[in-house]
Image (spheres, helix red, strand yellow):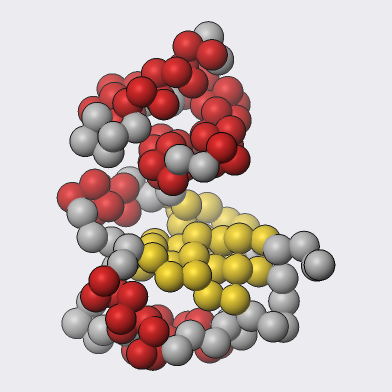
Length: 147
């Protein structure tokens, strides 16, 4: 099997609905079925899209909750290979990974915490960890990493 790489995008739909998202995914070489996207938007929180032309999988995560709104507002802009891109803050990435709960995600959250150490906003992390039901995981990692 060929290697797969994932990129997660946070999607906040406006009054134009799914059409801009469908256009963007087509432009990038992903086949996103309109009916599947509409159904997933109504019933779920994300959709995974693949492409036969390259090894990337794209996770499209819908902005649904108050936390999602806050995390989106906290995103950061950076230049990547001459292009402007937006990235979640390290704190929001940690919270999202802990929320996913898979071993590899919790390990990735620990890796971010280890690298970021003194730069993390622990007040923010603790504020959102409880309503997101990840407070036990966050504190366990903090203790394991001696942070």
